[in-house]
Image (tube, rainbow, N blue to C red; front, side):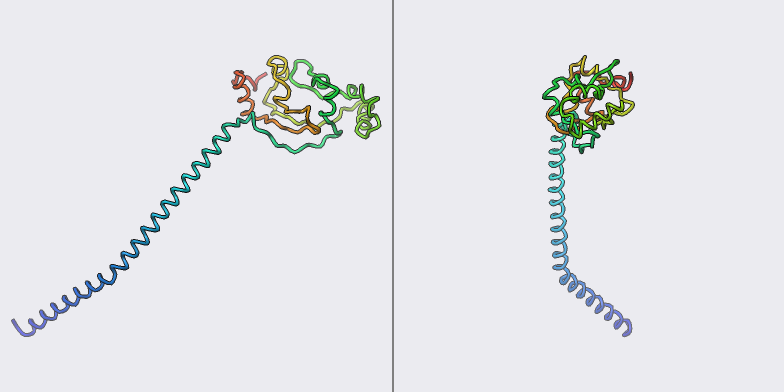
Length: 221
């Protein structure tokens, strides 16, 4: 073997030894860093997974609680909070029901019995011609009566035009008391909507009383 060949081989061997030494040094130096990285990475990942699992369980428990609370209060039982609507004349059902016991004494139900009407002004004046006839409210009532104009009462309970609700069927035939749909009116100074008039509320009420729940029951005359 020539001198040049031997020199080249020796240089190659020396380079290989140097590379191996550097690789071992690199591995020895980086090993602790890798362990630290893995430790922190997997530690953080484990912490994240645990926190996520706990939050998911908490959300499930809250959801179950809310669902249970909601299911225990069907729409027909839930209170409806509606602001009081201004009426043209202040009227206290609590006061008047001390003297007039039956709703139908003031609210007539003309045939075929779909609606319960507001009392006629003449009906009110049967009492108020002599009772509190000097109060501002009664003076205003008397003006409507003299001019033969209806008092523009603001309707509290409304159903859509495509819903046909018969007071005669519910009250006269089924025996449903007024307060079932209208709340404790006899205890109110000002009447507001206390009961829902949604489809869900009506269906719940029908099912409780084993009444029909077909589409034609409410959407067909």
